[in-house]
Image 1 (tube, rainbow, N blue to C red):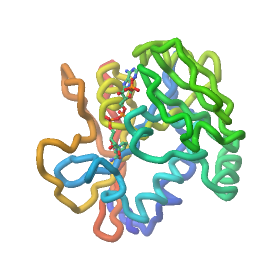
Image 2: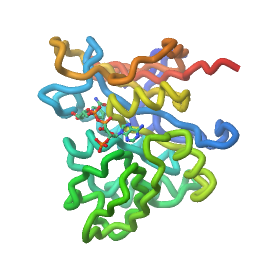
Image 3: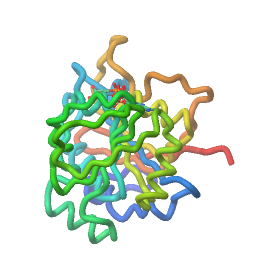
Image 4: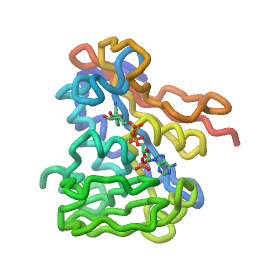
Length: 246
Ligand SMILES: NC(=O)c1ccc[n+]([C@@H]2O[C@H](COP(=O)([O-])OP(=O)(O)OC[C@H]3O[C@@H](n4cnc5c(N)ncnc54)[C@H](OP(=O)(O)O)[C@@H]3O)[C@@H](O)[C@H]2O)c1
C-alpha cells in the first residue's frame, strides 16, 4: 500500500489508522464524528444488499483498525439487520492497540433504531464485555440480552444523542459505520466531521442499491476537503474532512 497524497510513502491499513488523536478535534458539546464507508466507483454502498462484495482484505484491516481510534462505534439498525455484528473489537491485539492509544480496551457500541427493530440474538447484543447504548424512540426493551445494554429514549434526535454521549459517558470521538440512511440524517444535522471512504474498483449500477448517503436530501451539499489518499491492490483509501461553516 502506498500513500499518494499529501506525499508518497509506503503505508499500511494499520499505519493509516494509528495515532489519529481525534479527541483533540472534539467540538464543544458533542463528540467528533468520523464516518467510515466503502463504495463502488458509482457511489453504491451495497452489492445484493450487503457490503461484502465491495470490501477487500485491505479494507477490512482498515475498518478494524479505525475502531481502535475512537471512544464509541455507532451503527444504524438497517445495517445491523443486514450484517452480523459481534463484539466491536475482534481480538486482543486490537484491544492492546486501543490501550496504547490511551483508550478503553473496548469502545462503547451505539445503535440507532427509532422502532427498536433489532434481532435480539445479534452477537453484538449478547457479548458480556460489550457496553451498548441503544438510541430509540420506542418504550420497549429487547428480551434476554447478554451485553451491558442501556436504552436512551431520544427518538430520532441525533444532536440530543450526541450531547448525551458526551455528558453521560464522556465520549469524545465516534466512528459511525453507516448505513446510508443514518449517514444522511447525521449530515443533515451537521454532525459529521470527517469521512473515511474506500473506493472499490467496481460499478454496481441500477437505482435500487443505496449510495453512501441516501434517504434524507441535504438542503445544501456537504463540502469536504481531501486529507489523505492511499492506493493498495487497485483500491483507493481516502480520508476527507467536512468543512463546517463557522
Ligand atoms: N458500504 C458501506 O460501507 C456500508 C456501511 C453500512 C451499511 N451498508 C449497507 O447499507 C444497508 C443498510 O442501509 P440502511 O440505510 O437501510 O441502514 P442504516 O442507516 O444502518 O439504518 C437505518 C435505520 O436506522 C434507524 N435510524 C436512522 N436514522 C435514525 C434517526 N435519526 N433516529 C432514529 N433511528 C434512525 C432506523 O431504524 P429502525 O428502522 O429500526 O427504526 C432506520 O430504519 C445494508 O445493506 C448494509 O449492508 C453499507
